[in-house]
Length: 247
Image (cartoon, rainbow, N blue to C red; front, side, top):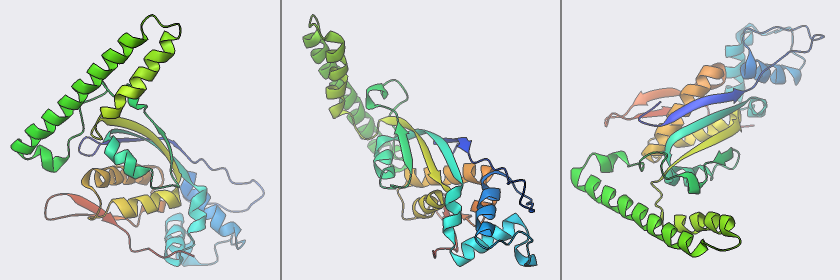
């Protein structure tokens, strides 16, 4: 968990080498699969180059030369909680990631509105934020009550009640909490982290990218080993990699 953002890896690549291939590696899962895919391109099972004999050094070489297609074979699925709908509106711009997000009809009651850190740090701005979100929720409840009352007694009342929630949610703010399951291959995850863990990214999104990186390193340490996390003067963190080219 990073500053309220909660990320858990719930699914990732497994690997089983073909029994007729005389090759071993010191890694497993997605890291091993990426190495296998790369070596399959050149039949380099006997590891002729000592500089790339380990999984870590081989994957680093893959990154150095930009042979990133091999990274597309490894995948990870992360379950994200404690983020706002403003954040997930940004997430969908990463079209190589796949999403399953909480329906807005279920958002109320999950958690309080997600407040931007800079707003929360200022008492006056915090008060304005709280008043605005509380007003929006009150408007939602009033609209919902009116629409449900109109639906009462109708022959299709269950459908109309569902539609009432759909229509009333139009006034809910982007600060409402949500949760989302995200699946992507390692190449797409690396691009997401490189773009969103930078100092130029929105802080909430940067915190998410850093939390995702921590989980990705846990399940595929060598595929994400090159990212360096550093602290900024304001106390927040960023992550960067020296490898940016692709072939």
